[in-house]
Image 1: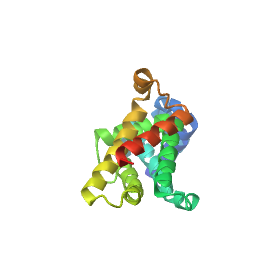
Image 2 (image 1 turned 180 degrees about the vertical axis):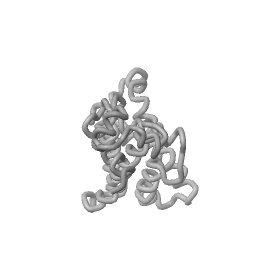
Image 3 (image 1 turned 90 degrees about the vertical axis):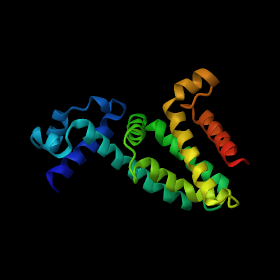
Image 4 (image 1 turned 180 degrees about the horizontal axis):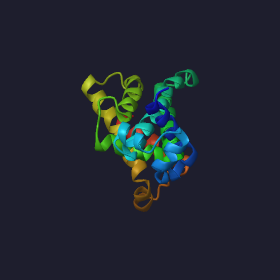
Length: 190
């Protein structure tokens, strides 16, 4: 493994260790864990923030790639139940990995890329949305799937405001599930 990959793996390990305190990770800590010189972080990544964003993207990519495994767990469910299951799984990940999820979403908003985590999530949801509404044309399906992903991201980022305005505590799994199901009914018009 080259120095760049060693630095990335060390940073991912630190992110996983620190959890919500990941913003306190220093270049010195990264380099110590990777056993490399301080200048290599800037050489390979420009700065610590770019390195953290890259690592967060990799972490979330792994989670998004695992969305396909829900097919096995949800074989006997209806299309709507599968979509609801995936949404609750997504929301649970967001709230259980708050700092990583927030960093990922904000990075995608700040600098959208063709294959960023938001787009990969969209692609994971698209077939389930299609199965729920086979009567929709392609444009409607794509637009409504985009709405769903956007609403979920904004709900996560603004969960404190949602609590203040609507009294819905999205940090509570039960309230989050009810909220998500309502979103699906609204967007799918079912």
